[in-house]
Image (cartoon, protein in one colour):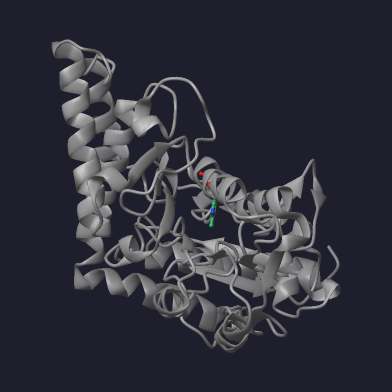
Amino acid sequence: MQYFDYNATAPVMREAREAWLHATEKIHGNPSSPHAFGAAANKAMTEAREKLAHFLNCHPADIIWTSGATEANNMCLHHFAQHLDAKGEVWISAIEHPCVHDSAKHYFGKRAKLIPVTRDGVVDLEWLTAEMADTRPGLVAIMAANNETGVLQPWREIRAICQTYEVPFFCDAVQWLGKLPAKGLGDCDYLTGAAHKFGGPRGVGFLKVPHKKATSPLLFGGKQEHGQRAGTENVPIILAMLTALEVRERQIHQSQHLLRGVWKENFEKWLLAHVPGSTVVGANVPRLWNTTSALMPEGGQQRWVTRLDKAGFAVSTGSACTTGKEEPSHVLSAMGFKAGQVAHVLRFSGGWETHDTDWEALAKGIGKVFAEVHHGK
Ligand code: PLP
């Protein structure tokens, strides 16, 4: 079975597993406890915070550990719900993950406005600049890289625009971190990440907040994380997350890693040449090196997923799927694709462990399934 669903979650790397096991065996204390065990746990957690701050280039005190990106994203929007006045708007891109979109709608209703994207799935900077000159929202939320299409968003430019108008900028960097350099991301006012997308364990992430600005807690209780997030910190998984990020940051800066993008591009070339009528989504713009989102010419997406699964390839539709009922991708819809086209989208997302031979094997598998679907089998 070959795994092409890294954007959903990635396997936990050996180094992260070892870091987790080591910390679980050796670091017993609660970081808030006033004895040597507590001090040891606190020291390890402080070092992890400093490492993350180093990668993001921010202050260690600006990092709040969370149970993952869903919590971190919700926390950010919850904070603004507490602080914006009754008329304050929140602008989010039309392609945000549901944990940003639904949370914004929950807290702000109609005051959560969608920022349009181009046909290629990039946030419309002209729209943003023109609208900002007119109205100032209380927050702009735009992700760094889209989970369905892999399309990279111009977060540096967006941050600069927001800075000009003194509007806080919140960036969900979940799919960017561990695939592209973290450097500079710490300049975003609010930033979120999750370990399990880059080889760390599931159930741990963070929210980076502006320096020395208190953030309203979503969870109340103990005074952990400077009173901003109650609950005993899970030191072993925090250490495992930072171990994973350290490994990825090292790999990202090795030039041979760029080959991975070439392998995926070769796969896309093969797809377009051998599956007539297929389309690569966002083909004209920079995308994550691991992600291909493609519209398949024949057969519904669920049929493709099931057949590829049987053929030994785990791929996904890239859209939310509840109890077996496919919902059309809001990302592709925002890009202007029709419902009929959206129903044919597949997401192939490889990772650090995916090699050229894996992409080639996937191409063969697709060729086989395409022949079956084409001949109505
Ligand atoms: N943001 C993006 C862009 C994602 O891709 C995901 C997960 O798929 C999340 C947020 C939520 O992350 P988690 O499930 O770790 O809370």
